[in-house]
Image (cartoon, rainbow, N blue to C red; front, side):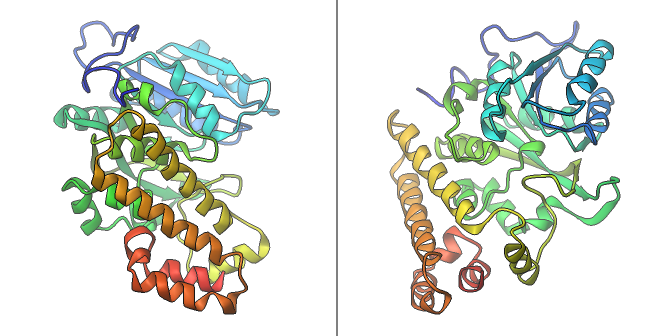
Length: 348
C-alpha cells in the first residue's frame, strides 16, 4: 500500500469540510486520554482558544477509572465544534489508542494531542500555514515550551532538551531528515500534524513502536518531506505520571533513575528502535517505495542497535571492547548520540 492514498495535498474520501466560507484544509484533533482528570481541562480549553478552530475533535479514552470521561462529556456539550468520544472497554496502550483515534479522523489534516499539555492559540493556524507553504511535506512539527505541573516555564524548550541543534535542523530541511531521525527522534507527537492521506500507509502501527516516531520515520523513509516551524506552540507539561517527558537529565541523574527503576529502561528503548526500523523496512520494501540509500541506513541502524542490545546482556567490565568497536565504526555518531550514548552503554 502506498504511503499516500492519493495526492499529498488532497482531501481524503468522506472528509469533513471546514467551516462555511473557509478555503483552508479541514482539521481533526486526535486526542488520547487515560485517567487524565488532573490536567485535561486545561488542554480542552486551549482547543477552544485556537485562532483557527478545529473541525472535529476525536477522543479515544483508554479505559479511564477517574472522571476523565465525565469531563469530556461536559466539554462535548459546550464545544464550538463536533466532539466524538470513544471509550475503550479494555486498555489498548498509547500507540494502539492513537492508532484508533487517527483511524476515526475524517478531515484533511490530523493533529495529535496528549491530555496534559496546553496549546498556544496560534498552533493550529501556524502548522496549517507551514503545510500550505510546503506542498510536498507530509507532516509538520514545532518546538515546545517545557513547563512544570503548574505550567511554569522550566527555562528551555523541547528542542533544547533533546538537543535538536541548528545544524541538525539544517540537515533535516536540507533533505537528510532520515539521517536525523535515525540518530534520534525529534518529532514529538503533541507538536505534530500530518496530512490525512498518510493514514493508509502508517496504519496499523506496529506493536512496540511509538506513534510519533513511527509516523515521521515511515513518511520520511518513503521520500516525503517533513516541515518544521521554529516557534514553540505548545506548553509541554512535565509531571510524575507521564510516560515520556521532555525534561533535561544528565548522565548522573539518568543513572540514579535507572537504580530507582524510574523512566524507560535502555533495553526497552533499544527494542523500540529495532521494531520501528524493521517494520519500516518491511512496510516500504513490500511496496517498492524504499530506495537503496535509505534501505542501507535502516539496516545499518538495526545492526548498531542490536550491537548495543548485546552489550546490555554483559557485565559492565566486558562491554569496553564492543563499545570501542562501535565508536571506531562511527555508528554511535551516525545512529545514536555519539559519546553520550557510548557512556550510557558503559555505565548504565
